[in-house]
Image 1 (cartoon, rainbow, N blue to C red):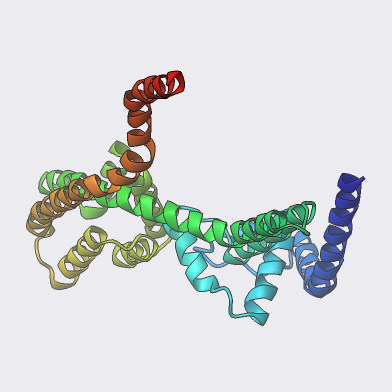
Image 2: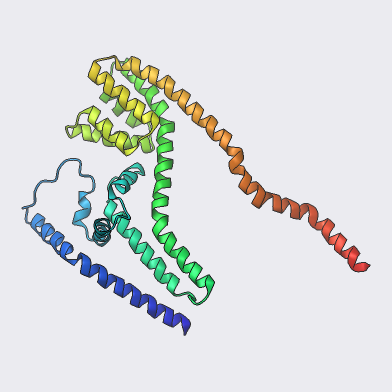
Length: 303
């Protein structure tokens, strides 16, 4: 009976939330539907080059979440769509929309909060469970996105010295810098290859190579990436030999990668303290001390 009442409560809360969202987002939703109908008749304005997420406007599966996120950003200062968009790009989600991400964040919070309502709210355990679920729905997505962007940036920073070495070889062999980038993209993989492919695509669309690299720096801002973009920009502006500048940059990047590896090695003992103290040491103590404790209890029981 309690489960049935909880299930009915979840349905009522979900229906009320859906009606409220529909009432708020319906005018803008209808406007977008009219724009899609106009586009179907061929009367839409041409899409500017470089708009990576405009194809989301033609589909309906993400539109509700986008409208929720837009309303949240418009009427509340709890979210920053510009910062969210920057982190989405840093994590490699080029076609994702910041407002849709925030909308899914709100929907996750509502769904997990509704699941928390099915518990026993009269007890401290039920209240704690509901609070944890709501906090997980609201704080979990941005934290996960931040971690994804961080790890992706670390992969790019680790791969940049090898890229610069390859650029030095190809540039000194007679290729242009753009040709060297194309050769490098064909020989590497991972997040760095994705960023370079996008930069080359922007160049093919008419953007200068310095501006394309500047956009790449905005998507993945790291010390090595910043040094590479600044070196190429200065070489293109001042007319300096880009091969010599890249050779010096390669030495600097290898030193920076070695220093970063040493820093990680120094942090390793501190990170090992938690599993050692709370996971490994208790198991060792149980294995070593358990026989002696059992014999001691048997001896005391015999007395």
